Image 1 (cartoon, rainbow, N blue to C red):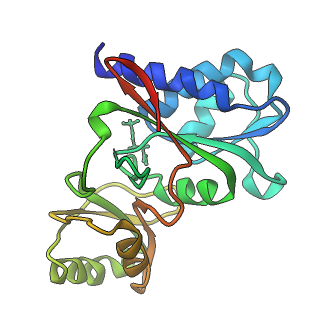
Image 2 (cartoon, rainbow, N blue to C red; image 1 turned 120 degrees about the vertical axis):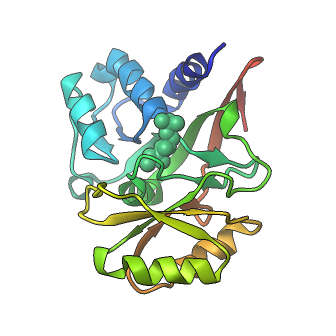
Length: 217
Ligand code: 5RP
């Protein structure tokens, strides 16, 4: 199976976590897009969705799936989203698509967070994938200098503006041995909006697409 087929397999497997009559949180990216396409097949069974990006909201609406503002709903039963990296402990790096802030908010609200990823995303230590940081524009250079002090090599994702009007720094060379501690530490910088480490609130379930089928971790 190629990577796309593995993404489709985990996206389909995530349907098992969708409960009838509930609000489903929907992530962003190519794996989440496959999930949206499968969700369309059972759209009559759910109340609706909240989306972690404008792009996902648009795709959901194109399928005729209702999209609510997070402030309008009582809760989110399950949140389904991909990842750029994951450990076996379900600590993640996210934000490759730049939607990390809304992703973290929906994950925080969701009663269950199901991460869907193909086997190429599984790592022993987070950090080979450059860590995305969403920062307010005026803090970009300041936070970049602070990341250099930590041994990182920040790159400004030039020309990209998040759905919230902010900038993204992709920080290379970080070896994230203690994801919970590093997420907490990086959260403290003035002007930091969101750190792309999802460890304080990890995924509850990881559906990993492998050659031997979908593994549940
Ligand atoms: C977007 C994300 C995505 O979940 C992550 O980039 C994975 O994307 P894909 O499913 O396309 O590999 O965090 O901000």
